Structure formats: structure tokens, C-alpha cells
Image (tube, rainbow, N blue to C red; front, side, top):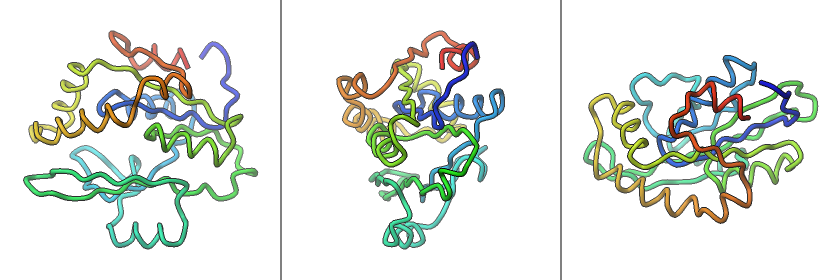
Length: 191
């Protein structure tokens, strides 16, 4: 990194399969950021571990939600393995924020990122939007599905992504990085 980023939180946003988690993992490994894990009720994908998310049951998620343990949350109606389902994602509150010396990277939706920055203070947060073409995203999604790619679910995600990431709103809140033809190392250097 050419200049030291002074923000406490790097928030990475982008459409499905745009490279958010890969970038977050690289920033942790190469530059010593800690991953601020979100919580989800979706099933763990092949190759995922507990370092990626806090995976919990829907019942436990809703219990935590009722106790105001999340900064923000979102639910998605999905089609998973031939069954309609609802998956929840939430951002837990970081305890002892003011006394915590670490820098964090977190992957969120755009609305989640805005709520997160409002909670911890915009002065502590930098929002990065990874701009990735749809055809490149589909290739990545097919690869990470390890043979279980579901076109119906992918089409649902494309439509939801268009609604969740209106370009005017993205431009207002985020620094946009075009990831086309870039390695994760190059993207990290831009941050």
C-alpha cells in the first residue's frame, strides 16, 4: 500500500460475485486488517468456513434481532436446491469499539454500508464499490458454486443487484473501482 489508510473500517460493497470476499481476505492476509464478520442463516457453501460468516439458524437470528444485536439486517427470498427459502444477513455490533485498536474490513450491501457508517461515524469508514461486468460475475458465480449453479437463482440475484445498487446512490457514497482485468493485488493497492 503506497499510503496508509487512516480509516478504521474499509467497507466493500458490490453486486453478487464481484470479488468482495476475495478482496477482504487479501486485505486481511496482506495488510493485517481484521475481518468484521456478518451473520447469516444461509447454508455454508462448499469451501466456506466459519471465518467467512457467523452461520446460525433462522430462529437464533430472529432472537438476536429482537434483542437489537444487529446494526442492520436484510432478508432475501431465495430459490435454493429447488426450494423457496428466506435467508437473513445481519451486522452484529462490535463491542468496545472506541477501545479497539484494530482496523477492519467488512463486506455489506450498499444500504447496510450506509447504516454501518452512520452507526460508527462516516469519518471512520471508507466505502469501496467493486464494479464488475455481469458476464465476469456469472463466470465467478459458476466457479464458486462447484457444479451446483442454479440459473433461476442467478437471474433472481441479477435483478436484486440492479435494485440494490442504483448507480447514482453508489456514486454518492462509494469510491468505485473497476475490477475488469485486475488482480486482487492491484485492487488492494488502489485502496
